Image 1 (cartoon, rainbow, N blue to C red):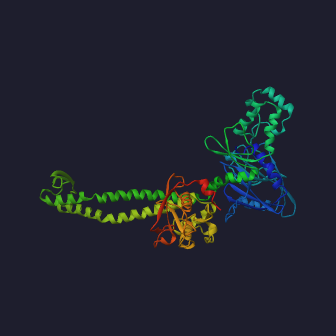
Image 2 (spheres, helix red, strand yellow):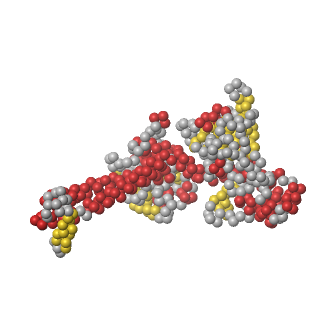
Image 3 (cartoon, rainbow, N blue to C red):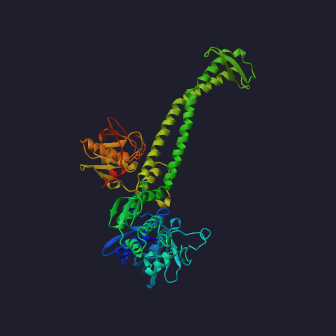
Length: 563
């Protein structure tokens, strides 16, 4: 079930008493499509997340602490000017549409009272958040300014008059009377046709409503179906294709398996969207960083292919030496001005070998040219091997950066960006300079094993170095996936049990490039056996005396240990 009209109706049953009458104390826009509004009511803070993301437009109260960006976007500055300190008077849904209006009362610079409306439109790629004046209906600003050529239905720019988007005709099931029901039933005697006349239902709601009417085509059934949206709870159900969906009621006519339920719909939504939202926010914030990483990976892969061709050519350069020797041996047969000659190859039972010649060179110079070419290629082998080694090390490094991005929380991207700036791959913008934050244990991922032992996990190369080389006790155990990028994992214990080792190894496997693999080899060794070579890139260490274990990381099992 998506955020359709009935879903929004259900959610507002919870939000209205929680937020109405509250004071809007803080507003920030952590990401391009997302807003967080902090309300203060009854000595309690409530954070309302509003997302106009095209794939998952939504709003709900969240308990997550989302980092405020260093530079506030224009829209949030406008919202702060007009709405900070205002009182939320009411929340109102437009019929059963995916449009919700938040009504605020505030005072302007002259002390005059203003009535402002923040309209949240959750309409797929057309989702938007629009602030307008209730007195004259003029738009003050909006999250997505739309060029008139892209939307001719209405003007979505500051100073334009606010208009509702084009809405589909349909009935509001919450307001349907018995007489109207009976008239409609006569006109549409089939439940499937009857259901099509209603607005605010997504595909699953329509199937469920149809099922209710097929069981009992009565006004009572209609009321039973719609009344459950006035008493919302949170349900997460799984389809036969193992896709999770969230509902505010428990459907009986759909092929779904219940995997989670909660009386608090906001808590359900917060949990349901947490990882999904995390991926969206990381993707938004890491776009520039990921472009650099992808470009470097492409360049390095091309370079390695080219170097391997050079190495192959150098290692197979004996032909040049043989041609030079044959020219010297049969120099008397080579005439000036010849472009090629066939000579018996005494290395191949005197089989004729065709040798190309430069007619501008003497026979002796042609022979010397082949010896020079041979010697140059032989001398290049060591240099090319060194270049291949450096390129592979850089490839591993950028692979580790990509793995860090894949495992990152939004607030971790700044540290990854700082690392690329320090390594010279990214230029720091002068106007965006920030104080570099010191790494501490609170920056790491922390886990508690079954027997209570603590495990710390680095989330990027700088954290990995700090955790392994500075934070960890020399007697602690260090874990890392074998021969692939991954986080440094420290088990804070000097004599772990077999179960401790297995659980810590599963954590290391999950926070690696092999997180989706079935069998992941993980090395483990005491920290005292780990060294960092001089000049090595961040996150790179060497170790000896390790043991290995093969594990299969399970996402639910690993994340359930996180504290």
